[in-house]
Amino acid sequence: MFYGAAPGLGNEEGFSGVSCDCLAHRFGNAGDQPVRTPVYPTDLTDAQWAQVLPLVPVPAWMGGRGGRPEGYCHRIMIDAMLYVVDNGIKWRAMPADFPGWEAVYRFWRRWRDQHLLTVLHDRLRRACRVADGRDPEPSAAVIDSQSVKAAETVAATDRGFDAAKKVNGTKRHIAVDTSGLLLAVMVTGADVPDRDQGLPLLARLVQACPSVAKIWADGGYAGALVTIVAATLHLVLEIVRRPAGARGLVVLPRRWVVERTLAWLTRARRLARDYERRPESHEAMVQAAMLPVMTRRLARKPPTATH
Image 1 (cartoon, helix red, strand yellow):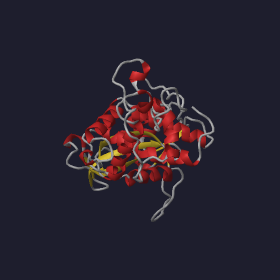
Image 2 (tube, helix red, strand yellow; image 1 turned 180 degrees about the vertical axis):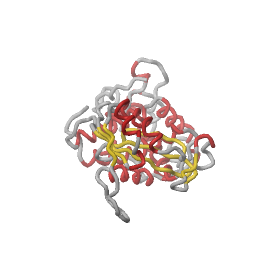
Image 3 (cartoon, rainbow, N blue to C red; image 1 turned 90 degrees about the vertical axis):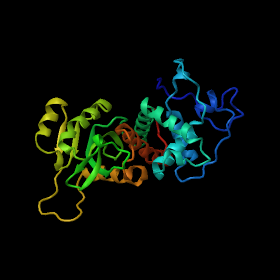
Image 4 (tube, rainbow, N blue to C red; image 1 turned 135 degrees about the horizontal axis):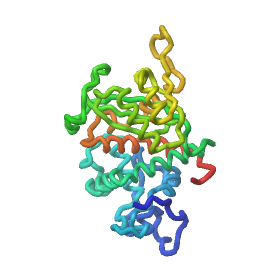
């Protein structure tokens, strides 16, 4: 798969008759499809789509690597994907004004398996950081986990019982930057302790963001993990603990950032419970749930530079 940036955004020769400027309308087989009118709160606004369009991964057929040209509008398919994530519906319950559920699911599955969703997510995150006047790549991160109940569609081998939270299901482990944007995610059974999954999560984080040098975490990651992370990944893992004798809600430095991100995720109904048959599908849903957060930021404050 070719992951280059999209071509220029202006109307090119032979394209002036189509009002949608996505790659599928401009260069694929979607040119004769009507442009769908946004009607749902989850639909991307024109301002949001203007930020997404130049960052959409270029399909293989546009890179001369074969494959069938796109047959559906990228904007429509992304809107359909966001509708599923936010409303928590079954794929077969896709509203009639979107393409058929089979087509939307094929699009979702291809973007998941070929990591196109990851590419788009990471590009949006870098654009958000640049728009905030920061370096595209982070130097620090905050990690935490969240246990959620699992539906019957989740295999017994992929779930577990979190004795502390009294949850039979799965656990998503995330790493975010200091503004709460997602850097890495891993999904395990809910019975996996944070300190046991801390090293694999941080290894994935280092692979995705090699510039990260310092990590903040809660007491669940304390112990030998601090030394192991320093020796193997060359990261500084700092444990942020609750003050002695503190009661009730206490806003802790750094830790509140990742807690807020976890709250953002649970607002998406598809993530309020785990319905996915594969952990990588759950991870992709987490990335998809972050797209509206980032596109809204960019629509309010367009980037000052292109990366």
